[in-house]
Image (cartoon, rainbow, N blue to C red):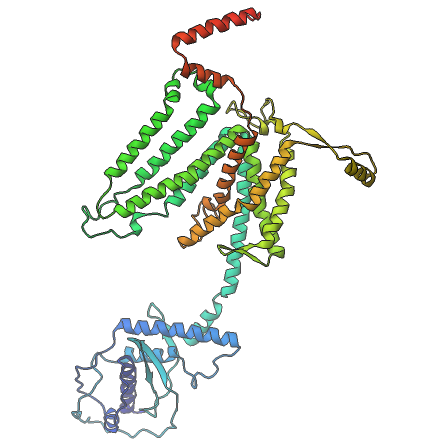
Length: 590
């Protein structure tokens, strides 16, 4: 083909590409088509400019996206693009325009009406070739419009260009390479199944790690369990208070002093109230359970006798600090955070304090109720997965009525067997008097009457029926009162404690979050695991202190009365009378 015909083809490609990018849908006249057949030497225009690289890249990116959608659609319907000439894709048109833009000169493409100078070389007429008909190709989307380019409309001798595309780095990529890359992409469903298996594996692994660590700390002693409870409540407090942040709220007005500096309400006061609340609550527990140590030590005595006034003074300092930190523009957010912190202290720290008291009253009052909550959760999952069909509550769509009912009866049976086993060990049932004991220590105490076995005389008609049924005489049934209390704990763990989890689910929905945090891999945050435990711990302490605890005089209580209620002279007089009484009993006091 002659030089003039090559020039004509290049000129046409340039006009087609740039007309598509500049949203020009006007057909060229016959005169303009005749001008394109002659070489152009002087081109001047100010209306149409060469498209920028960003527009080309944007069009290329959209072409790749459209191509992927087409391949995915064809793979689903079982069809492939076997005729690229009849059904050209958006990517092919963009590739042609990109190649045309690479070959075109920086001069504008719109010609003036002036005639070009004839060249010295004679021009040969191009040989007639069959007309190639192709449908209109969708052009790139610019400013929300889709342009259409008819490749064969203006030049019947134009041959289809090879299908290529340009990647983000400017490298040419052929169509087979793109198709191969798309075929090599993993199936989204397979990726989802892999993630699910990995999540189950991680969740199971950390479940055994938590159970193993929990049992190890249980055997090591009361002090380690107290440290674990305090650690859990600290993490929960951090996760809950982190949901409320002044940074997520806009100021009330634009008149804010020191704009750009640190928020007026920092984490300092937040954690200060947390520390003061723990000092007050755990101080009360230590004074109550270790009176014989606290009131016999002269250095600890001032703190024990003035514990409450010291706690109130510390809280007052924090309150004054909060008022001093109030600033215009943040008042609504600051008071909102103040209320948020105090509600968190009430629901988290106070509940954690009751759990620690359960540990000090006897490890069994913490271990068994916590186990019942875990057991109920597991059985609810098992029953729900096997026979669950009816949704229970909208806040937790995965909870079912069948799982809820099945877990109730399973927890009742489990509670009697589980509690009856652990009530045999003094380490589990004895209140703490020495924080240095462990499961391997020889712990001795007078057990609470609820752990003492008793017998129940069977009703006469029932006695006859059971004797005939079993083939031997059955007159009494041994039992421990603690087993009856276990049934109460099981009912609460099955019917009421799950609503602590529902409350947490509603809380997360209110903030549009999946988990409270990522403290435990595979399980979310600590709050996601302790939501039911806090409610169960409070119930256990209230139930135990109201119906089970024995209120009797102890050495620590009498010593507290002597130290706090008698003067020094009265204490000396008491010692003389006590010494005289002991000598009268034949006991020598050194």
